[in-house]
Image (cartoon, rainbow over all chains, first blue to last red):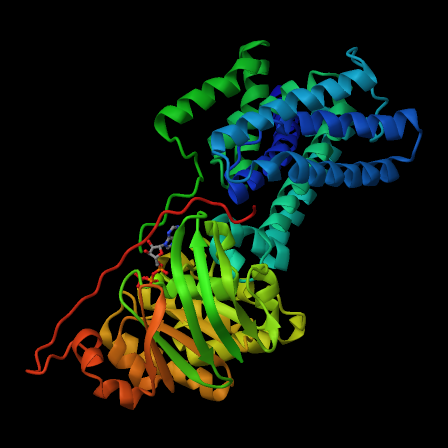
Length: 290
Length: 264
Ligand SMILES: Nc1ncnc2c1ncn2[C@@H]1O[C@H](COP(=O)(O)OP(=O)(O)OP(=O)(O)O)[C@@H](O)[C@H]1O
Ligand SMILES: [Mg+2]
């Protein structure tokens, strides 16, 4: 029982972080049909920027996180403006290849600046052990869940209520109709990339706080693929639930069956889902009535 | 208010579609634009609303003036802000958004966001059926309700000029009549000038103050509805009345699958 609770909490932490990383991926896909293969690298870059600000420059962590967010938004805007926009009108497959190039570029930049050796990240979020129902978990994991839940909640409200959020969903539905409402599609794409970079950066900082910073983080980021395939490429609730399912599945597999297998299981799920329900659990089906 | 002077539009640098199109839309009036399939009616509206660019089309000659400003080849968002709103052919509601969210998207360019709530009520006033379905996903509305939503959504921008592209497309005759009545009311009560593109000549001539008939990229005939109704060609080809009084019917629906090019 203790083990179960322990694994559940750990799984929820990973799941919440994965959901955050997947959210941005879904946004980009929804608004522009682009599959962003650099999402894992956004996570990596975010983690290193947080590391630089908080550990290397010694800023207080709330300030460090706020600046990381600002930097991530900047990265998102630049990527959209200089990498994606010139590709508009090109076949979608070329755009996807460009995101693969972008992922190598970001990884190269990170290893040029910070090297390739893993570094420990002195936990900036309180991490004293907390006992819950007989199990012991680090407070940092609870914080990670709380932060991820708050972020996801904020974004849900943003998409449902705010002018820009509704405009983003409108663009996702019908770009030309959105254009005819005076919605600037370019601006919306820039928003999507910025939000994607920002949420991935937070996810990266949260993971790094728990396991340290290293190139491995983009491997953690790789798990967004099983998450979004499971949840549905274009579904925001799907990203959240998919993240939690994959996170839990991983820790249960690791805890009850064996380490090692837990790295494989998400991709097993990916293949199974592709075989039985290719649009994912919550993917939008095309509404057929014209 | 709006005038087109010898406008020429070319798609993909080679396909000449508007060949010297000229027309006037005076303030406060309803102007009809009739023409058969492929005449260039939708292209005319897109040239006005700035929606040609995404389809790789361009105004290459002539000019379009609105309230004294030249507006051809300007960004769609600028043109909406000037007060021109287009209700596109085929309704084009945001399918996965609710009715209310669609209306919110229509008010995107409004600066006075505090009045949006009041205007949503105004739209529901014209289309009570939308109010009943306010939280429903737009993709599951009936065709008629979607057309109402498309018009309501445009109304949310409080346009000075509203351009409607074939609002009768695919709707039952009774519903078409209802929608045309509402268009007339919007014109009278909101003071919105209306440019109405249609294939349904009979109804258009019954609500319009003035009408143009276009063929093959230019205007071939224009006049007051009562005069056009007397014209032999109009009677034969647009009203479907031959001299013996038989009715013809032609109604084709077509759609292009377009390449997304609206950002370049
Ligand atoms: N994006 C485009 N690229 C190339 N040609 C186009 C494009 N859009 C329209 N055309 C051509 O321009 C001509 C006029 O089209 P348009 O859509 O303006 O006609 P319309 O009068 O609105 O017809 P309908 O009543 O069928 O809607 C057609 O011959 C069409 O094939
Ligand atoms: Mg048309």
